[in-house]
Image 1 (cartoon, rainbow, N blue to C red):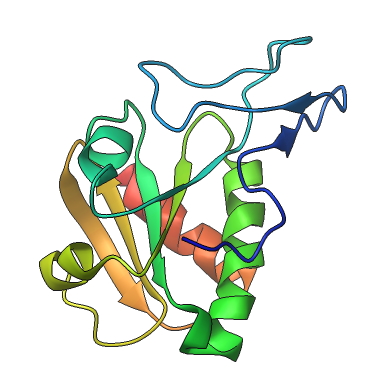
Image 2 (tube, helix red, strand yellow):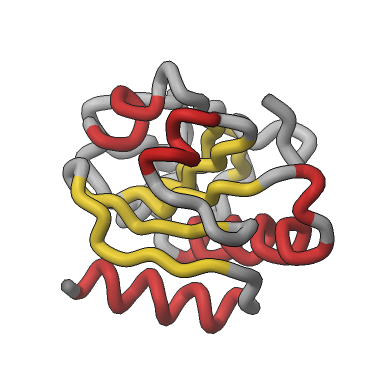
Length: 146
């Protein structure tokens, strides 16, 4: 699986600047190794590890079903969602899914990118297409409030 970011598994703490590598799946919420602030949680999954990483998460997950051939919309959504994940560190997990046929069938993908907020295995909301970070933040906040 390929990512649009250089290494989506390494994040920098916004408070102290330390680079951290949060686990893909965990029973808690990742925190900075130095200052213990919540970290943005960004990871990638495929068909085989979706349940462990997304459905078993203690916090809601924003799932981005994208494809490298999706063009500009996919390239726009990824950094916008990463900004939302950073803004909502400790409250949201961002999960990127690329080329996962079983998941594409499970969450019928009509357009790329298809986004869903999943909380405790249940799809709270979903949408398709690109949007700027403020619109995605509002969409996620509405889902978190539901």
